[in-house]
Length: 335
Image (tube, rainbow, N blue to C red; front, side, top):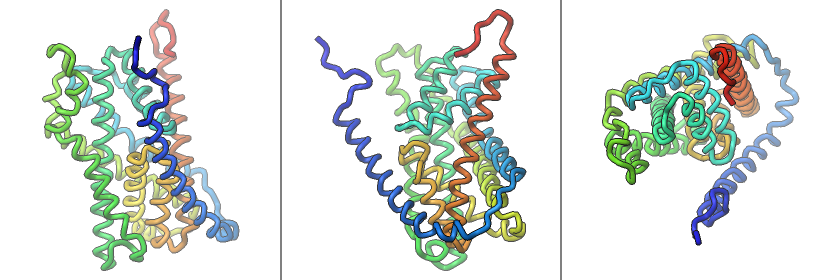
């Protein structure tokens, strides 16, 4: 007679976690809804014009911004002894991004892991590599937000532009600590080794290869990522206001970079599917004072979510098609 719970069975831990996530999501949605109601008239009265060319550029910049993350993920797998070809790796990476819109975000790991199994990568190695790449990205994103928010605060002599949202800098510091500490080599090796605690020593991958050199290479790659994601936000703002001078866009660059990096990191750590409402709340809180209107900030936040989601889906479908056409004759199509 077994006493363990079935994988899908509800337990006190799951109920508590889902309850906390639901409470956080409900509060954020409520505050965001209040702001939307308050800004609705301004949104209706403003003659917004969407420019497809700039929207396309926004999506391309976003996808290019994710490519250094894919490069780093492949580097981590190489260090662990599994050289995965580029095509299946990119397919697994971008396809996995769609999993973040499922509650708990566990599907991200499942999708990537299942894809890498076809390349001979063991499940536990794939899981370790996914967490290492993702946490490295979030740690650098939080650090970018801290530096930019600190610079903005110093420039204006207050914690943030307008002094109304002093909670953003502590939020960035807290998110950075939560993401950075687990990726430090000694800490990460101890955490990852738990997956092999009941396995023979010869089955454990060379976790010692994930040292400071690998981590610093990841940090350098992620700086490129966050720079391109900031560019995507600039292009997104340009797509809804083509009359905005480029000099003004450059002035807004630090605000956009800080807003995007902190919003994505906070959305990830919230465990809310896709960071829904969390990302929008952070973007509106930081950009509304800079843009002079919360309506424009809210519109940009929603626009980035839609463009980024469509871009992820489009490149996933494209890579799936490429892999289908490139498979050897007689080989069954991947499921």
